[in-house]
Length: 448
Image (tube, rainbow, N blue to C red; front, side, top):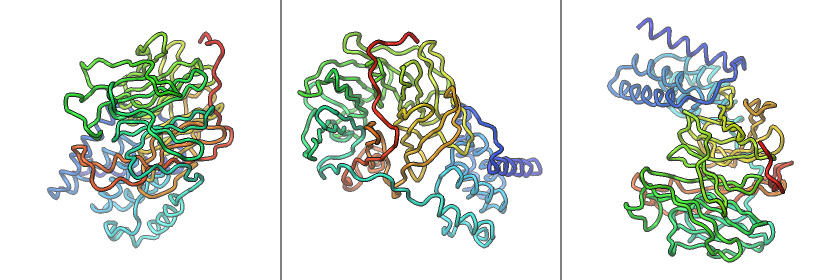
C-alpha cells in the first residue's frame, strides 16, 4: 500500500512539473507503451468494478504514466483519483487535461467533494474558457441529404470543382463552382470499396484516390474484407487510368493520399504500417522508410523539395522522413502539445504544419510549429474548433485556406457497421490560413 501511494504522489509531481512548462520534449509515443497503457486501463476498470479502490487508482496512475500524451487517460486518472480519495492527484490531472485541450465536464456530479475546492472551481473556469468554440472557418459546401458519410476532398483549380468521397456510398461526387452536385465516380465495375483520400493533379488531369473495403460501406461483403487499392481517374471524364491492388494476404486500409512535389502520389496504409509511392508510368511500390512504432498511419506532408516528409500516426504521434536516406525520426514534443489523433496533415511554409486532429475531444484544426530541422514541435495553436460532436477528417489546401470535411460519420454506426439513425448533412468548411498555398510542382525531381 505504501509503495502504491508513493507511485500516486510521484505521478502527481510529474503532472505538476508538466503544468509548469518544465517538461522536456519527449519523443513520439512508443507503441509498446501505448499497448501497456491499454492493459493498465483495463485492469484499473476491472479493479474499480469489484470495489478494489487501491488497485483502481494504482492502475489509473500506471495508465497515464505509460501514455502521458493521451488526454483521455489523464482524464480517467482524474476521475479515479477523485473517486478514491486522492484530490491532489485529481486536480493535477485536470490541470494537464485542460492544458492538452481535452474536454472535461466541471458540472458533472461525479467529482463529488472535489467540486467544492477553490482550485477545482478555478480549473473549471479555466477549462470553460480554454475549450470554448473557436469558429474561424465557415461552411463552404453542404452536400444533399442523400449523400452519406463524406471522408476526403480534392480540388481542381482549373475548373473550380471540388470532389468529395463517400465511405458509405462508395463513390465520388463533384461540386461545381456554383454548388451543383453530380456523381463523378460510382460504385459500378470495377467496383469501388469505401472511398477515402483523394488528390487532384490539375496539370496532368489525374484524380488519385484510395479505396478500402470497410464494414461501414453499403453493399459490402465479407469476402472483400481487407482489400484495398490505389486508383487514378481522369480528372475531366472520370475514366479510370490505373488501378493498383495490395495483396490480400493480410488486411490493408489505404487512406490518405497526397501528391509529392515531383508529381508522384503517396498513400498511407492505416492497417499495415507502410507508405506507398505511385506514378502512372511506374506503378506502385512500398517505400523503404519504416519505423518500429508505426501503427496507424494517416496524413503525409512534404517539404517544397520533396526530400523531407512528415507522417502522422494516429496512435503514436508525428514522424519526420528523410526520403534520401529513408531515415525516420520520431518528432519530439512536450506532452501538453498533443500530436496523437492527427488525421489530415498539410505543409504550410517553413516550420509550419496544419493538422486536422480528430483524436482529441473537442476535435480541432491546429498549427504545429517545428524547430529548424523539423524534429520537434515547439508550439501548437488551435486554428479552428467549431464545437459540437462533429468529427472532421481530411482536407485540401487552397490558396490561403484549408477546405476540409467537417463532419464525417464514423460515430453513426454500431460495432457491426450498421447505421444508427439518420445521417446528418455532410459539410465542407473553409478555414482561412495566411500563407497556406498548394504545393508547386517541380519541373525536375531533386536529388535528395
